[in-house]
Image 1 (cartoon, rainbow, N blue to C red):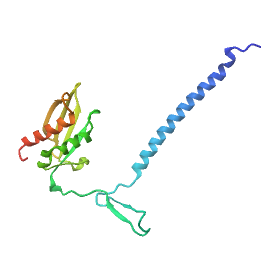
Image 2 (image 1 turned 120 degrees about the vertical axis):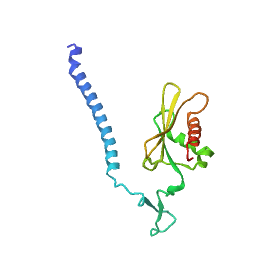
Image 3 (image 1 turned 45 degrees about the horizontal axis):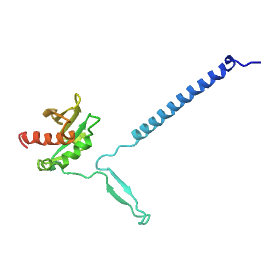
Length: 178
């Protein structure tokens, strides 16, 4: 008896269904793993700033000795104005702008500090990518919501982060009370 393609059709159809089932199962497992990580991190109790300490044991010490390190060092509020850097650009990260700001001597002379907590910020430096090579930066007073300075710059002829840091310092020096 001669075997035709019609005889293999139920088998091919079953294999196709098994592939589809395997793909759906794989996606379900991956998405469950992502959800499991989210629920674990959300279910952990949040610590306040004053209790944010962790314990660490060292191997050279006895089991009875525990060293407590502060997870967050307190900087006096009067030390300077705190700047939070937010970048909406995929090409220029906020951490790079922070690094360039800290390397500028005028930044420290004006009494500015970098913060990673938006709630602690006095100023917010926002950076977004505009058309092609253009970038727009805005400096906003975090408490009042007022735009203090803004500008547009090009990525040609230097790094954007360095240009943003330079313009930020220049604009802040122009403001009264700086």
